[in-house]
Amino acid sequence: MSTLTIVWWKEILENLRDRRTVISTFVFGPLFGPVLIAGFMAFAINQDVKRAEKDLEIPVIGAEHAPNLIAFLEQSGIKVVAAPADPKSAVRKREVDVVLTIPASYADEWRGGERARVELILDRSQMQAQQSIARLSETLLRYGQMTAAQRLLIRGIEPEVIAPIEIASLDQSTPQSRAGMLLAFFPYILILTVFAGASYLAIDTTAGERERHTLEPLLINPVSRASVMLGKLCATATFAFISLILCIVAFAFTIQLVPTGKLGITIVLGAREGLLLFLITAPIALVGAALQVMLAAFSKSYREAQTYLSLLVLLPALPSMIMAVNPIKAQEWMYAVPLLSHQLLIEQAVKGDVVETGHLLTSMLVTLLVAAVFAWMASRLYHRERLAISA
Image (cartoon, rainbow, N blue to C red; front, top):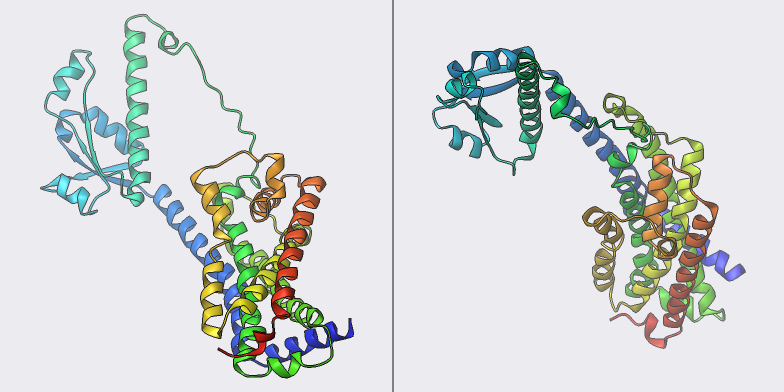
């Protein structure tokens, strides 16, 4: 234990003196990420709210054929403007979001009580146009329903005849549970911070020391190489823990600046939620530290270790990518799968759902077991005689 403590404290002090390590571990990863994401979210929400509140300008072709429809659109907050000379080209070039076309046959069809046709010139591949398209389509649908009801009343028929079923939606979501949609990326950010916080130290304490020729004097001491490896692993895990804590604290402060209330969403990230997130994610710090120390010991040079660990950073993204492409309902066995279980548990914590103790313990125990396996493999690599030899 004394050897482990000495090596752990040595690595901590040496890397705290390195400005690059401090900046990459304590600034770029845990602090820059939450600030950047919170700023982006605030900007996106404000832009959406502004677009929803202001009058929507819609170019219309043939407005003279449907004066009542045009009046209804303007009463609904839609401003009718002149259409461009080439509406299809204007839509493709993103000069306008959508163009409403009212054919000359509209008036005759309307007076004859027939179904009057209008056309929307749009491009569904344009994400920024989706809100305008949806708002115009909804307004046209309401106008059609209102007109249909009036026609039925004129004929002495109750409008309910054509709508025998009334759909009432009972939304069971809460302002906090809706936060899960906005924070779908949060599990990935936390896990990525843990891996990134440990990467530089894992490389430097093995591959870096090998190239500086300081690893061999350390290993020739009459101490267990497993103790030396554990000391380096604990130092790497310590930096990962600190990065995780800083990330949670930074996000707790920056998320308060995001106007989520405008969307009817509440994000609660206090001391209790922060502690729960730390308990969920902390075992991953040990896995990340053990895995990265093992890869650094396996690598023949500092550059090779950087290559391996840069690819390893993609590993935390896999569960998020799977859940984004194929949302699945949580099953009991999933809480025994590292990374996937953490994705599910972090989502539950952020949404305010009850995190079951059994699921949390299962995830922690399995993850710690995986960390122990990687640590054992790293220990075996530390017992190789050529470990201290620089390539």
